[in-house]
Image (cartoon, rainbow, N blue to C red; front, side, top):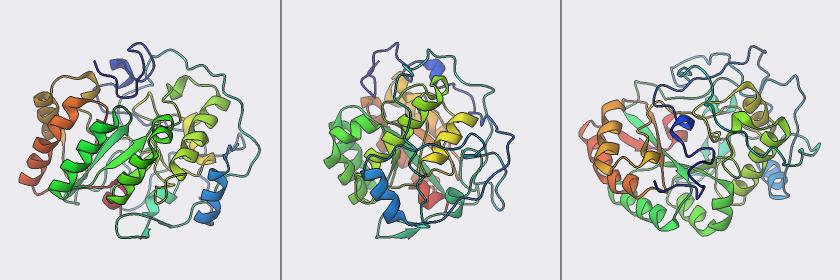
Amino acid sequence: MLLSEHQPEDQPGNRPEDHPGGQPADQRDDRPDRALDQGSDVGRRALLSGGLAVVVGLGAAACSTSSPTGSDAANASGAPGTPSAPAGSGTAPPPSSAPAARPTSTAAGSGGAQTVPALLRTPGPDVRRGASSTPAVALTFHGAGDPALTRRALSILADHGAHMTVFAVGTWLSANRDLGRAIVAAGHDLGNHTWSHQTMPRLSEAAAHTEIARGATAVAAIDGSSPYLFRPSGTPSSTAAIRTAARASGYARCISFDVDPADYQDPGSAVVVSRTLAAVRAGSIVSLHLGHPGTITALPSILAGLASRSLQPVTVTRLLA
């Protein structure tokens, strides 16, 4: 199997148990929500660019579980429990006592600054899908692997007038900043998939904070990237501890998915296409991986299948607007 994030096969995030085939679960935190403070996005990026490492009080409810009002955009349900995977090193230094970043209600994107959906600024459960009334889907990609494969994906998407969301692994993004800039320049969303793709549910509190904060710093270094989009690594859904750490870095929600064709297992492009199109619905968020050739080969057929159903591939930000 070609590993999308250059990890040995027995490392966290690369084994089937790290990506259950069933519906992912939101592991709910029973503590009450706190309203997400508003502030300056410029200030947030300045903090991140300076190597932001943040800490949150133990009583904070990050990405907590209260249900949003309105549509079904934050449907959060699925598999019961976290994957059974070996612990990460847990040796990362604890975050500093710098204050948590406070995002604003606008972010850069295709066509310049755009309003960030209120859902992404409101603490709550994992966002698994958008509204079923929206004739669109979000193709999301874990950003890692051979940069040439990402460039192929960018070309295919441009040919089809489609957009994606890339949740980039920080180490990969830092080594390929020109690629990150190309992703944003093409109108795609660029978010955080942690710094080094550890199995998040197994990390210590300090290590989880550091993984998310360092990933946020790497993303913030790319002008026009999103300070609102975070997906935890090594698990299809967040835990209470992950949500707390995410909130500390300014992420009110964690982004999950409702369609997982298990392309990381390299089942072949035809299987990736059939699994994706069999499960996708209006409002779906699809989990894919840029580092796998079979996924990129499958992409034109996936886009054609979506077009035949009049489903437009858009960014997560656009899907949730």
